Image 1 (cartoon, one colour):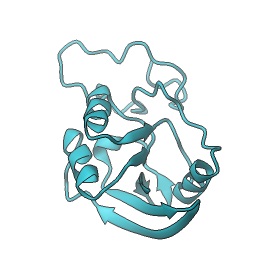
Image 2 (tube, one colour):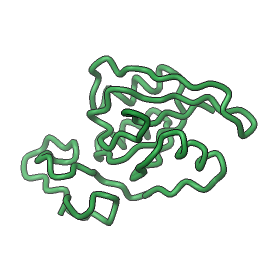
Image 3 (cartoon, helix red, strand yellow):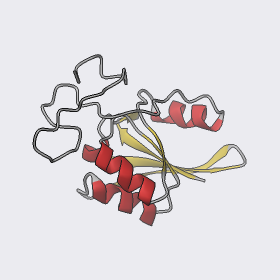
Image 4 (tube, one colour):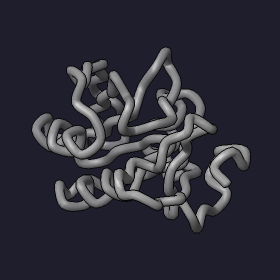
Length: 139
C-alpha cells in the first residue's frame, strides 16, 4: 500500500490545495518499507489528485481539504483521511495500527486565511462545518 501525507517540516500540512510536498510511505505487511518526500511542482487543488494517482498512492492523510479536491480524490480512487494534525510519521504509524483519529466529514481548515474551502464559486461560505481542528476559525 502507498500512503501520502501532506507534509511540511515533519508535520501534516493543514491545507491540501497548497501543499508543496507529500511524504510517501510504502507499507507492506503492517510495516513501513520505504519513505520519500516528493515535491508537488506547483500543482494545486484538483491537479494534486492526478499527481498522487500517477505515483500510485492509494491513501491520503491530510489536514483540511475542500470539497472539489475530495471529489477529485474519490474519482482517482484514493481513500481520504482528513482532519489530521501533528507528526506525519506518527500519523502513518497510527493508521497502520488502526488507531488514526480523523474526521470523515472534514470540510476545510483555512485558519482565517480568507479563502473559501477550495470552492471558486461566488457566494460559497464554507457552511455546515463540524469541529474539524480549526479551533473555530472557520465559522
